[in-house]
Length: 285
Image (cartoon, rainbow, N blue to C red):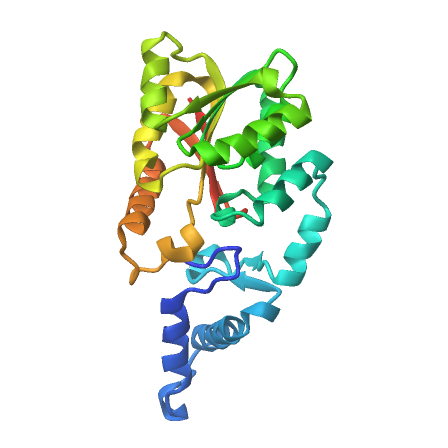
């Protein structure tokens, strides 16, 4: 199993195995074949990369079956470069900077994530969208800006204070006519939409709400999104915790189980993307 991802995090288990091997007395290394020599070299590289992640230009998967494929490691310098190449509208920058001073600002998606969401909406030619977990509205504003004038976004958020900021920026950006704000529990809103006859009438959905509810949100959204439509789930890598078998708190286990269920779900095509805290893009079959 490949346990290293293109984020600044290393496989704890692989690192520990490498350290143990390399600390053995030389007589235990017994490089009796080219295969052993290759493994020794790989372990040496792995421990070196893990111990200096901030400078590592790339990482590789633990599993040799992945052909030692080099994957870019996102360092601080490289991420600054990525952000410098994001086309962030001025109104989104304003909202991001205001949100940075608020409690819970880490919940806001990153500019590169918002740009990807907007592009997916444009590629789909989406007109009807749903977002679960608006917070102060950065991602929903990016989506609304990408929608045509006839488009609409159902924005679901339970926190009234956060919604006030979001609504202010919808007005400033001139997209209030496209956004239908639903204050309350996201699952209740989705169930109401289904009962209202809106099944298979949406093109795109973005989920960034209560992580332990992801499976229920997903099942409800599968009813609301059309065939060929897209559902994107945020935080699927959960700060790298999902790959660490020693971490088993309720949220981590829930996300880990959700990821496993998605892998086996034949109703959708999927792609897990290591952007932000990890996003899985699902296309309904």
